[in-house]
Length: 241
Image 1: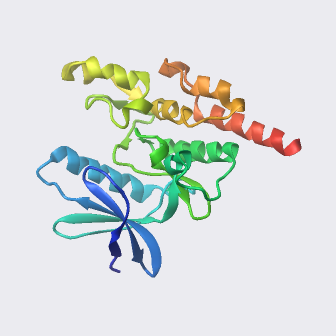
Image 2 (image 1 turned 90 degrees about the vertical axis):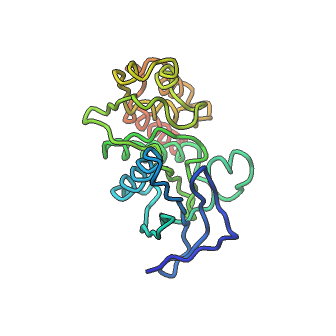
């Protein structure tokens, strides 16, 4: 099958990629068109990580990779089409239906827990990377900074902090001042994603949860099972009121 996309319908864009509205197998899809940069090893590795991780992900709260195609100059990631992003919703650009705040947090935490269970860390959790599906389900997307972790969830910080600085955890930001040799000895873990997700919580019931998710000390930061337990207990409480 060959993907077809409309060059005049840009859904999003970044440094080395653009996302277009397209069709594939008779269905509307999002097409991420990535410029190949074989001379830039780091960029090539990033693209490979994004494709490799998404191929093995299968969860209702993680954006689905449908297919991959390429030509001599570009690679095309064919993705399920969504209606907007959490960033669009916050800015008022998306005004369609949304899950309740508690359901939205459960969905995001569940998607992130799944990614961690597959032994990956996302490293760029932020509103722009949470998509709103056509059926109003939240889905974590954009795995350009995603990388494998050990069985215990740790990974090397030798390449320094990644993602969007405002959502980076303190242990990420502290590596800015380190030399490459010092960074090579530092390890972080998947709780850095939990710190970022904590900033997406808004409502009053979540204040204690936000404090736990954004603990400066990574060892004291809440685990996702504790986050989900808190959210599900609150959902049950609301259903009984």
